[in-house]
Length: 317
Image 1 (tube, rainbow, N blue to C red):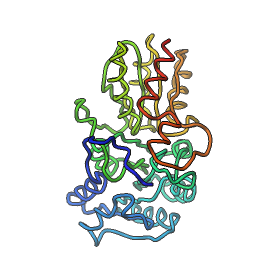
Image 2: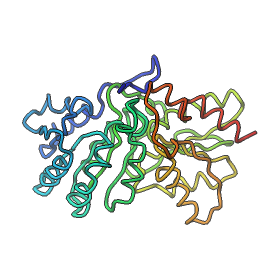
Image 3: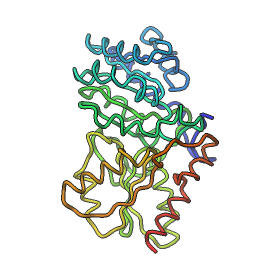
Image 4: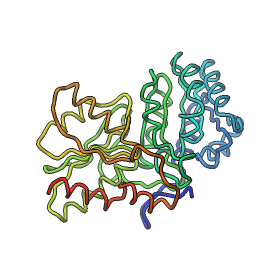
């Protein structure tokens, strides 16, 4: 049930993370790849095939994975360590915190199956990973929308100071943002679509859904703006608050529980800035989710494009 969330017929790019990491390693001999028995399922196998002498299979031992990556960073290498997001956030948090974040080492964690990108159920659905990681000092968190985001993010993560966490979209990943004159910039949000009636602030695959919803809402004569926030921490409050401080309906969209993710990040900055603006959250509920087919689950929990359209129209009614 590790299915693609791409729509039928949608343009996709195969394994953009693995391709980008392999390409980066051609330019930078310090780059190494590690995984905890999940190379095929985090696209790390692409890197391993091209650079077998710089790939390390650590087995089903996520604590060891992060500890070894920290040791490599300590001696000047640039490690990218992949596992599932649930194992990174829940099982190996302390090792990432104390081995990589506290000494501020360049350890890049790549988390597969973030949010609701699998139907396997609570054991593999990392619906609270950003909430867990947002409180970790020094850690940069990136929630990419598509293959463009991932490809452009990888070299910037490698060059960034301190540890990073990438919410990986794997396999055949949609290609969306190239149609919007967009370039990924670490730590920056981007207005990818303007609109005078509604503002959708989104991250991850929900930016794709936000753009789709904006097109459908245009048929209802609703003009929708979309702000993509691929970096959750550090958060580009300046750009987002500038867009929110209008009389438009403001909505956040995230593939994450509404507790501790994008919605609460935006809300906290609004309060601190004293803006007094209302924001409507679209995200996953604060509960363990069902198992099943992804399209069914996305509709059940309100992440499907038609669900977004219905919610926006109901708020405007």
